[in-house]
Structures are given as structure tokens and as C-alpha cells.
Length: 433
Image (cartoon, rainbow, N blue to C red; front, side):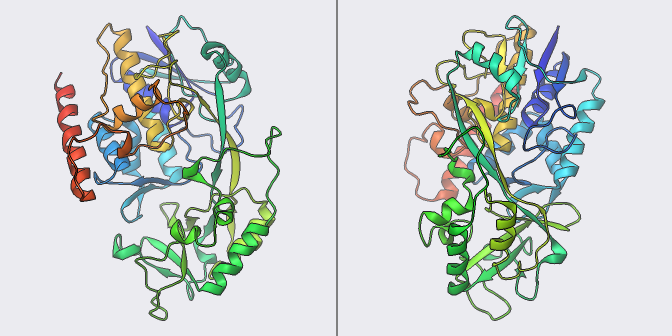
């Protein structure tokens, strides 16, 4: 028996790895390099587009707990991320090219995984298949997915942040450091006084956006990856309470507390490229250079990638998908990645893990591994399959979708530790089985 996987992104590669670990052959299909989506450029698998950050590490937040759970189950994505990580304070950030290459090499060298190149446009509902075509799935396969799901589709737009070179940042104005000293010198900080901030905000609001495709005039922007210009429009101080918050930072040049701070995070292992944190945008490229050049220390910044906005498509999963990521109507068809309604790189990989584990177990005639909402893995799989959700929207992992602890704990750190303790106990029991 051979399982077919469509898409070699983070979810598809994780699914392939989990299936192959069970001794089952995998046929992994990838349309690159024959055809690229609007957001992808590299021929390697598991390409990171929006950011090199896989967000917070450690058990004191939900995404950090999710990473630990995935490590327990031998995640390929986490193994490669740990191998290629770069300094980022309390976050797990990776060398993007190094990470994708590591995943690609692992997949291509596995004896049970056969990589096939080309666009898949049709799906056989009688064959075990995992569709991990991504939120930018090609129109060819979208049509057949509509047939399988009944065409109940939603869409939103996602945005990517620009990247600049280290040598073009004016370090006479910028300074290194992390908020409250956590992480040492992992970030470059560009301080702004009130006049500089207000000028920047005003020009950001006035800047010209790039035209949207598909005739969409009012895109439904996912809150977790909101374009910086949309954030600026929501209020004078919105950015200062978001990615430009100055708390926990002191400018060593004059020992003052900045009015606002733009942070840049290392984007590659060599430390020559930096991502402007929280600056996902849909502005025209020329406008990005003009407006972002108003940020002190970025006046002469060299942009190696401008921000851009792209279509993301996802299934209205509740009612048509189970908590093991397979369709109710066509149980041999599984989905994985952002197309299921999970949001974020790690969340996408986790859905590939759960789908891969369970598709493999089903083929082997074993009982499926169902994760409860006591765990991060289960909280996501149960969220996307919860028929009680009436206004389904993409979701990052968060403690709000976990089963409640049953008691009120005010201390956030203690509360997170209790979530982790409960999760690990349950997962250790599953692993022993």
C-alpha cells in the first residue's frame, strides 16, 4: 500500500515523514519547480514565506507547548528547525534557506519516500491521499477539492514582511538588544521619538497599496498577520501597542526610553539579513522604500525582499472534517496545513503530523490516535472539526481552545505549566501504547 501526499510544504513533509516512519511507502507530489505559487520562489520543500520565526519556544505559551509535543512524536519539522536555528531571544527562528534545505534533504534521502514533480489536478476519493496543497493551492486542484467538500469555501489574504541587509542599517541610531534583556542582543532596535513616529504613521496611511487580484476590494485580513498600514489606520497608538511597542527597551545612545521602536530580527544563519518584525504589508514596492525609509536608521536600507500580500484559501472544516483531519464523506481523503483552517507554520506542520500518523495507522489496520483538547495537537484538530463553531476563522494555537483546567490560576506562568503538565501526562500515555 502506498499513500499519496499532494504538496511538499511543512505539513506535507511532516505527514510524509510520519507515514514513512511506520514503514509505509509515500508518493510525495510537488508542483515546484514546474509551477510556482505567487508567494514561493525556492525549489526546496517546506519554504518559509512570511517570516523566519517559528514564534515563541518553551512551555510557557501555547505555540511553545505545541513544539514540545511535536518533538515528543519525532517531528521532522522540529528536528530541522532545531538544527538551523538562529538567535531570536525567546523565539525559535531559523535560517530560512538552511531549514528548507535540511527538510528537503531528509525527505529525498528517505528510502520509503518517492518524490514526484508536477501539478496534481484530480483526486481519487478511493485512494489514501493527504492534500497538503497549502493556502495557495493551484486552481487545478481547488476545483476538485470543491467537488469533494461541496464547495463550501472561504478565503482571506495574508501578508509578508520585507527583509533588509545588515550593512545598510545605520547602527549609529539603532541598537541591539531584546525587551527586558531577554535574549541578549538578538534584535536590532530602531528607536523613534514622537514626531518621527507620527510622521511615519501619517505617510504609512497615505501610501499607495498594490492592486488586489481577483477583484477583491475589501479583503478579510487575518488578524495575526495584519498589514502594518491597516494597523496604522486603526488608531494613532495601535502600532505602539503592537509591533512598535517601546516597553522593556532603553536607547543606549542617550539612555532614554523611545516613544516607539521598530525591531528587526535575524533572518539567516550568517546574520547578514534582517526581517522587519510585524511589517507585513501590501504597499507598492516603491512606497515601501519611501515610507519605511522614514524610520530612523533605515533611511538607506537595502531591501532584498519587499513585503507583499497573497491569497490564502481554507476549507470551512467544521461538519465536513474529523479531528484526525480526514473528510467525513470521503474518509480516505485527509487534509493538512493551512488549508484546514489552522494558522501558522508550526500549526500547519502539527496538522501534517496528526494526519500522517492517522492515515498510516488506518492503512495498517490500527486504531487511530485521537488527541484530546488537553493537548496543543488536539486543541487544533478539535477546533477545526468543532461543529459548534458558527463563524469559522483560521486559528493559531492558544490556551483559549484547550480544555479548561477546572480551576482559576491567576499567574500566567503557573497556568501554562499546568497546561503543559496535563498535556505531557496524556501524551506519554499515548506514546506508551
